[in-house]
Image (tube, rainbow over all chains, first blue to last red; front, side):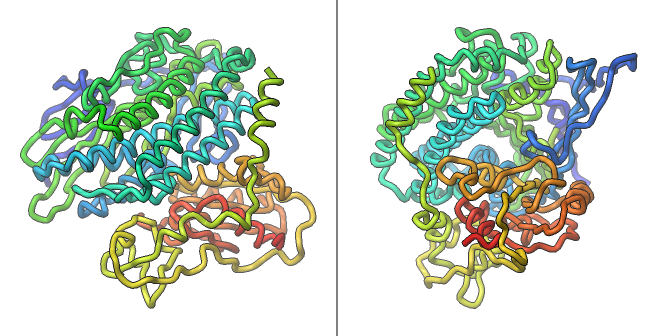
Length: 400
Length: 205
């Protein structure tokens, strides 16, 4: 039996040591592991518990919530996951990357790149500048369509149907652009070890198409900013700066924290911040996503025109000769893979993954109990960008 | 505010596309294939078995023999009579990566506009005519899916969406006791293929 590699409560336990993973590259450190205990809800008159899920409207992926309510008000929510526990078994590198892409299909590029960074780092493979550039472009396209999709879900929850269908139209165009450029709408099969799918479209034609879509996006946003209904409906689910220290991605940035892993690997990168936007509410998180869509489009343009380049090829921390921790900024935040490989067989021996959703689900639980009623559930849930597939990944892969 | 939406809408015009004019997305990209390179063994006897193909893209980089695709969807048994009333769909995520779910959600997109065919989603299996299953069907979800299926009124049909629910794809196939009436291949299948399969199943094309 070898040493265990396990991620628990945002700590990596490996080889007798424990590493605190934090919510960005800056907070990575060797820290003593402490067990987290669940708070207890007292049973008293008026508190009613009901199970929401696993197969029901509103929840896109199969999972459930134990919701404790007092009248209309939500007192506490407990996630019930494990329904989507697929037996994930990594093997040789090519197959492992394909599996990583399908842990969370809409974060395929982030999962693949994070795993590949780990493998390539241990194998001392340095991908060419072009490979890194294409990976970054794909990663930003993934961010654009995922942010758009979450905005669609917010509009859907708020019954803002006209805006919802406008964004859905745009979302479909972005998916088609993905397909035209890389051959897959969700960017599956884009990359493998030191390899990249050759773009099927001239990059300048692609850029022109993206510009047209972004101009359309800007027009819709201008109209939406005048909507008082949106302002009122989304002012819920507050998360303070102190509470946001344990969340990641747009959820943290919407609560005034400037944490973004891209600052570490992309030149001149400035993260979108929620500082100027409201108060850590669901609206604030939606605004951050809107700004990030525009930023990502600018970033793609800068990458294609070689105005900026990547500072380094990967963000990894070596644990031993055969094991590393790799991290990348996925659309919902910081995604961490810890990998140990068998060098002779070119296979993955052990792997553990800490998804952004594993952190953000705690943030959601903290924000939903602040004067929220059940109709606020969906605004709040979607604003955190929680994905259950990556939260529930099982088998050889250990996660939180 | 509403005036601005109206003006924008008039400027954009109709975005809904005729189903006949949209080619299934993933058909055109599977053209060259080498059997030995396929990670899921989906290439045999001159065909790409779309029920197994995960669209990994490895074969498209090879410059070898051109192969034909099998059908993107297959109907096992249609409804006995053509359905004249609205059709309600209940979607079940049996352990998918969410890509299939997103493509099903995409069918309400104005580009595809599911509602123009009188089809809509329901949150209650007791109101549903069709059960759409995505993902590998994990042991934890199998009982819930069976309960949902049993509570659907007759006549009812089951549609499997994506290779994970058909053959397991790159994952191990889960426990499964429900026989399907229609399968839609792809990883994930695109909205137009899903829509065409549903319309064929209901005798609407």
